[in-house]
Image (cartoon, rainbow, N blue to C red):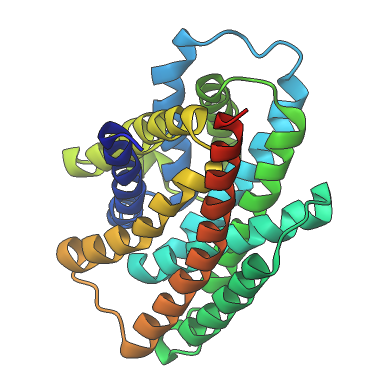
Length: 294
């Protein structure tokens, strides 16, 4: 990889990892679903002017967005409200094993044994985290985050099966649909939205801008640029840095602490994700070398 692409990969992990820290700070003021609605509204207003209309994809986008954005972010960030950002960052790593499972069940993909071993290790690490007394008192929030991971994985499969849009166009139009769906969900399930918006200070609004502009628009812009150049298995290892940045940011900026059990469980989860990711990296690198010799 060129140095600029390595910097972009690390930047994606940093931007996305710090997103949970900013979101945790903002959730103290905004209801979580409303926060996500505002996040996607910022993204939509930034990007939608620069991409073509999603002709022929309107209905597909509705269902993809409902699963991969509206439901996923509602569950994940409602769970974040009851958990430390550091614990949530570790639980969110279950997106990777859930994606393996979803690809196998829904797309009949074949995965080799290192990935399945990694899946088992990931769930074992989550069991260690959930076994901590502090986490056990917030099991409802834990299952919301885990449910959000499952929704994300199914949503990614739906994207691969239905959408033909470019990366940036998909990001823009998913943001448009997601903002509408999330505002409706916030209206149904939450209250106090008007007061939260009226009383929001610059720090809270800055967190919304970070989530919508930096985390979503810039982060996904870098990510899709890398995916256009390299196989996903070669860029996915950068995402292993995400929980590290989230945990460090949570400790430094939010004053959180992780218990020894949670640290061990988190290390086990990351090790499992690493097995899955580096198996994909190895195979992606081999495919890239084989293609270059043709």
